[in-house]
Image 1: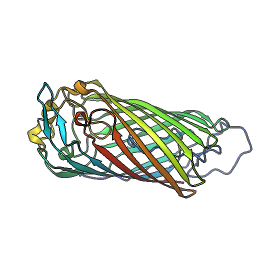
Image 2 (image 1 turned 90 degrees about the vertical axis):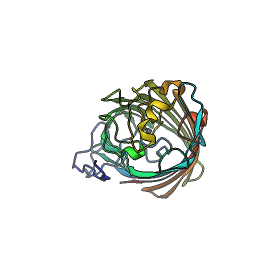
Image 3 (image 1 turned 30 degrees about the vertical axis):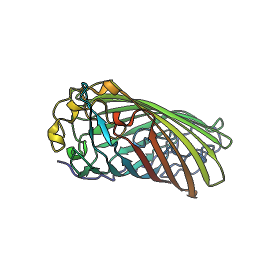
Length: 318
């Protein structure tokens, strides 16, 4: 089993795209965001899927303290079982801008510390790995508008003890948009995860929205909403054998949201999960942005894996 936390990025020298008119400037190894997008701030919640539409070189360190519901709903009228406890996740994302429009992204990695109180086993392990490319097909610094598409491939390299590593991997396809207007920022994204083995994993979709306001030059307030939906259920085959003997995919009536894909046979019973987050960002320097958000489910908490979540992150741009 691969238990290696990657921290690998691609660093290739490339000429900055000459899409915008104006005098030529000196090329650099790591193109920065085009002028007009300097004030853009990254969303905080749903960090593995909800990315900024703007390609730019940077490192994104993430810590999540995720409380599990006290009860989890079972499929086929089976009632519920007590679980409780929490999950702590640690990850680092990387992005390298080859030019103003194209970047290479590493969106998922990290270590998961899984600490349920009842019925499931306490364990730790590595998350699956995902990486790919982002391309901004609309990039207008005058109107401060960007729209991009991202394709990443997720590999089943993680550990089953923390509900990772099942199936044969899959493809994440998403479109993101960004609009700045004076002190306001609006952002959104939608996409789908398409597994290469649709028995082992469910086909899922997501949509996220973000609105933020510059309270001061450094302090930024934000609110976000996320939806996760089951588009096609998995087969519920035995998996994650160190957790409840492998019966979790057949027993639960929901899917795993942004962090987990259970391949649940009855995931459509409660196929929609909606969460809301509020938070702040504080600019430590021109290149360092600290973020904190508190998130709650708006749908029934026993019909997903989230009771609440605190996300702390640090965005470094170059």
